[in-house]
Image 1 (cartoon, rainbow, N blue to C red):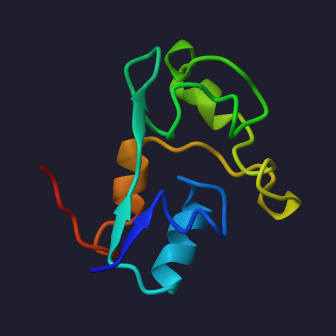
Image 2: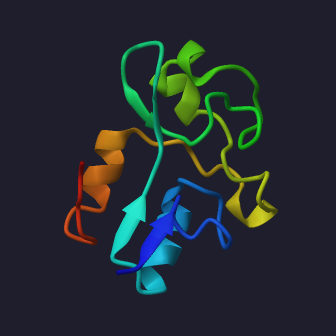
Length: 106
């Protein structure tokens, strides 16, 4: 079993499609991701309680709508190649990677 924590977060910005794509290319069969509820009751894929560390903004995830989170740059902190990488919803992420890896829940 090969589990990619936040995707291939040593190679691309964590919890982004870039990190998940890299993890799959490296042969992972499980992707562990983190989620938080937005102010408009959507589930966003982001590790921290705040957007401070991994975006160009600051504040609690719970204070942003999903559309506001999507407009943030969640990639530049990792490197210029990832500028503009968005925060995604859980539904969008699951749909995009449907069939790409094994799903497990507890």
